[in-house]
Amino acid sequence: MKHLKGYIAISLAAVMWGVAAAVAKSFFNKAYEPLILVQMRVTLSFAVLFLFFLSTNRALLRFNVRDIPHFLVVGILGVAGSNYFYYAAIKETNVSTAILVQYSAPVMVMMYTVVFQNEHLTVTKIVSLLLAIGGIILAIGAYDPAVLQGTMHGIILALLAAVSFSIFTISGKSLTQKYSIWTGLIYLLGAASIFWSFINTPMDIIRADYTAEDWKTFGIIALISIMIPYTLYYYGLHHIQSSKAIIVSTLEPVVAITSEWLFLDGRMGPVQVTGAVCVIAAILLLQRDDPKGEPIIVSE
Image (cartoon, rainbow, N blue to C red):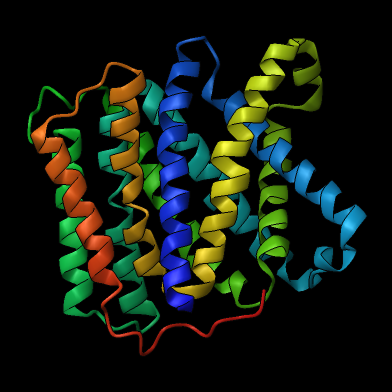
C-alpha cells in the first residue's frame, strides 16, 4: 500500500508538471523570460512554506549543518538547473522537442542506480522504460522530423534539464531517508532561491516594477509547478525507488501534449492516444514489479 501511495503521488506530480508546461508556454508568449518565471516560482514557494512552518511547526525547520553541501548541490544543480533548462528549452524549441530530449533522464537514472547503487535491473523495469519512452515518441510525434524543431542550443538546454532532473531524483532520494518531506523540500527550494538571488538580484526585481497581474501570474506558476507537484514527487520518493519514480514521471509529457492540444492548438490524434496508453501501461506494469529491495520507508 505504501508503494502504491508513492506511484499515485508521483503520477499526480507529473500531471501538474504537464499542465504547468503548457501554461508556461502561454506565458512565454506574453514576453515573460524563463529566468524570471523559474526564479519567482521557486522563491515564492520557499517563502510561503518556510513562513508557514516557522509559525506552525518549527521542529520541521531543524537540520544538520553537515547536510548544507548536500542541500546546496541538489537545490542548485537539481531544482534550479532542471527548472531553468527545461523552460529555456521550451522557449528555444517547442514543448515536444524539449520533452523528448529531457526524458532521456529515466535512462540516466536507471544506469546510475544499477551501476553505483546496486539496484536490481529487472525485466519489468526494462520493459516499462521502453514502453514509456516509446509512448513519449508516439505522443509527441517524434517519428515525424517536422515535429521536432529548434536549434542545437535548445536541444543542449533540454539535455541539461535531463541531467539536472536525474540529479534531483537520485540525490534527493537520499535526503528523504534523513528528513521529513517538508524539511527536505523547504531547504532544497531555499538553496535554489539563494542561487537565483545572485543571478537576478532583489534589486533587479524591484527595478522591474512588476504589476499586481504579474505577481498573480508568478503565484499561479509557483502553486501548480512547484509547491504542489514537488511536494507530491518528494513524497513519492519516500516510497519507491528512484528509477521507478522517474519512469512514472514520464506521464508528464502525455499531460503536456494533451494540455497543448486543449489550450494551445496542439494536435492529438490516434497515434498520440496510443502513446499515452503506452506510458500509462508502463506505470501500471511497474507496480507489478517485485517490491523486494525497495528502499526503507522513513517516517513523515
